[in-house]
Amino acid sequence: MSFKVLLLDNVDPVCGDVFKSRGIETDQPGKLTEEELFSRIGEYDGMVVRSATKVTSQLLEKASNLKVIGRAGVGVDNIDIPSSTAKGVLVMNTPDGNTISTAEHTCGMIIALSRNIPKSVATVKDGGWGRKAYMGTELHGKVLGIVGLGKIGTEVAKRMQAFGMEIQAYDPFSTEEHAQEVGVKLVELDELLGSSDYLSVHTPLTEKTRGIVSLKNADKLKKGIRLVNCARGGIYEEMDLPKLLEEGIVAEVALDVYTTEPPTEELYGILKHEDIICTPHLGASTEEAQEKVAEQIASQMSDALENKNYKGSLNGKSIALLTNKEVQPFLQLAEKLGRLAVQLIPDHANNFEFEYSGESSKYADVLTDGILKGMLSEYVDEAINLINARIYADERGFKIKEIVSSKSKLYNDLVTIRLPKGADYTTISAVVFGEGDYRIVEIDNYGIELRLEGDIILYQNEDKPGMLASVSGSLAEMGINIGALSLGRSGKGSNAITAFSVDKPMTKEEIENVSALDGIHHTRYVSLT
Image (tube, rainbow, N blue to C red; front, side):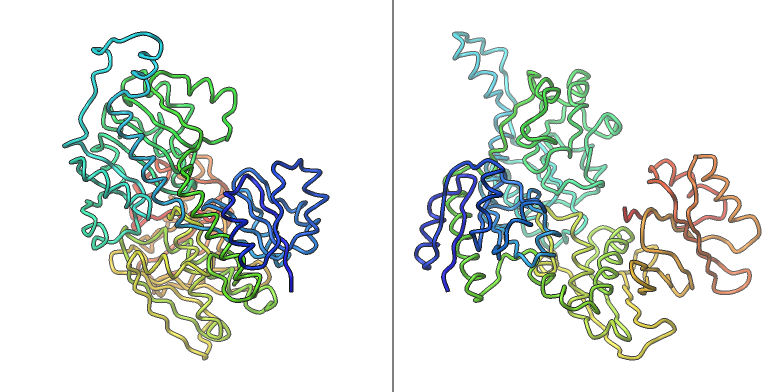
């Protein structure tokens, strides 16, 4: 059977060479208008893109023969994966191809900041000299803080140790063993911000990582810190950078990524600041990296088209599961439960127990993948899916025990997660009540019933009159409306557990206000929005 693949976004020519060696025809037409792409896409079995082409649901509707989309790189923000999955189109990427190039670019940015390289280059080219104006600082003996000790963060740490830097890192999933192997000290985020002379981020952009550095948390930063971001735009609050620089809180900034790419006119204005170094998303822009990812994606797609191997697939298992309507609700439940559980565990926890009873026990293997995907997706700077979730969990030293029972318990088809010692809550059980209705039904042997959605505040309290009124009154004073609540207790007059579903995200200060109330213990806030 013959196949035809469209190569876009100036992917390296080696991509076409690999396809040709596999007997697959390719077209590499250069830049196409949206209209031209829409009119031609129906001819192809495969399509290779980088970051420029947007693979939308509208384009997919025209792609009548499309079987696989390959992203020559890591990020797949430009590909509509749910629509691709619904259409049965495999989406693949090359998560390892850019690691070294991005790490090297990060190191280059750190050095450029330290020795005022861009400023001094511009001065000399302009006919100036002024050596005294460009006094630098040595990296030796300085603290480099790294947020996210995944593949790229680890490679940056290894390289900057050669300069005599002390490396500290914040990564809630990195184990002490991994950190020790690469000579890194694990610390809490606030400690990292307060002790780092240089800060480099290597995480995805989520609600938890957005604005890690901003005017709001300026008091946590070591004065004169230098910032580097070659990961995702928005992790540093870009609009706050000029004031942070003017007030001397931040000494210099180096950016390779931006909230909007290319930047908006307003953002371009900020980037003109003399203490901001900026490059046009060059982290993966090396000849070696582009050749490597082009070669990898062509090999992976060829294997997939020939039904030989599906390495690098982001949605292969999801496509298979679309044909099994029975497993879909359990899989949605597992991912939601994983997202909730990860917000309750202490940092660096790695021992977990997953139990499945009733019908859910038939799908234990894939449900564990779903739980791990939910746990890891907001903390790992790679695309996490059902296929690779266990790989990333293994890399982080997760120890997983699965318990399977075909017998139903109090609730049919229960899915339970047991968290390590040290967590405020160690056992969470949930079930599927109906279509789109997923509920927590038990926490630490307290019977409770709350939908797995939105924003939830959870706490233990003394079982005495007035406790509910105290908390609800505090929420009312802060303008927070209660959407639903559930109460559970082990016996009359004993401790009780309460969970509120609230109508808006809560700030750290608002959560602390609830926690400070008399008789309230182990207050935890979880966001599933």
